[in-house]
Image (cartoon, rainbow, N blue to C red; front, side, top):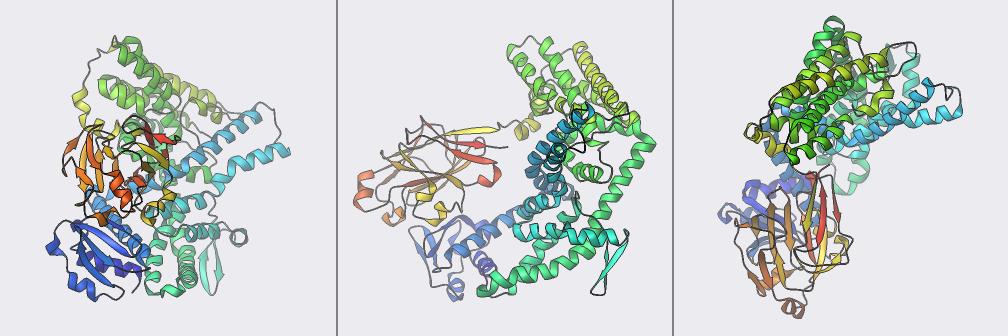
Length: 615
């Protein structure tokens, strides 16, 4: 039985994922904390091929698997997450689910695209000033550096989409490489833009460099094909035949159906937007300019990214999202700066000045969530300013020639020889700024925190969270922990401590989410949403609670510095327990990075242990 089917049966016989409170493993055993023991079908588990034994021990359900334990455990965790995400997707609704997919795919690749865009903008500026020649080798090298991420965008998106759709990243990247392979490009060019024939099959001739939707559709199909093929290949042959069969099935479908379909969708989106802005440019610009902040709040602006990249591919510029976002951001800056000048609240004044500067650079979240939304009327002023600027962008069909953050740093990217494009974008941002700035100055400011309670709970979280150490001792890397569950970061990232004192304290304000019956492991959830597992020693479960003195109960609220458990350090060492203690952020996948302290020694609830970055 393959790992996927094996894991599915175990989850079913355990009473479903909802009956599993916590799961981990040792060298040969799967270990579970079960919510309702009566729902577990032990007899059925014992009959499963590959199960060597099952027993409840020390408050745990242990399933003895042998040397396949890591494989099966990883598959169980994967399926439990997939089930949770499917539930979440159903709750979100179709549109929200699609927006979540688009943002999840594009956000990881945006930094390199923005970096390349800044370089291309600088190159445009140098060319406009006649400081560099298009024919010089220096220009060509810089152009390669600035254009490569966009040309090979399908490859970048393949990796990101594979992570989102939970499939093999390298097979996904191979599909992208096939789409932009030079020989395929030659076939497309020689076909005259129609079709070419291979193996008696007619294949649409399309250039896929710079595209987005074709590879996203391809990787989505790959995720299903890979799981289907992997189910039927024996374990001993998977490493060879699974990728071979997956490619043989995926590539024809990609070239004949998925990629051309994605390209057609992109073309229709582009044509629809061209028609919209050519027929109703001022109105479309006014509407989008006024709605950009609301789209940002809802995450809907990411839905326009495929169209933006399609514009850069076919037209060489974007005339929609980036220019209109630029004038909208400047409107937010204007409204926020007016608040800074007008308000008498020193704290609000300081916040408004700093966040207006960020908004000028194209980052508006601090301005919106900290100032304009909080005071409400400046937010309306910013919407009006963005609408006016958007209308001007629509009237003059303002274009940007490189991808960039829509802030003042992008101004050089609007320069074009022989046109007034640069003058028009200046007119747009100045108009949006003045409308928002003057309107805010004329308004009576009233703090209205209650009106954004729902927004605040979702968006006002700090981007950086610092966790104090829950224990006193010597710092060690997770790789030094003699348990694969922790050393390979299967259940999350973190750090380990070799304790020198027998006490564990809460590193933050929060709630106790889980306690093992033996008291050697405690789960916490902070008020900011960080899920932390504190595991005292390795294989301490064998002590059956001896040496541990719990001071809290499951579900209890705790404050930073509150004692969670006392343990007898000498007793653990006398019983030959390895006292190295992993401190794991179990929802690590929700954060951009988790950075451990550089200290060699830490004092409990005094020294910092981890820095968690949201983005």
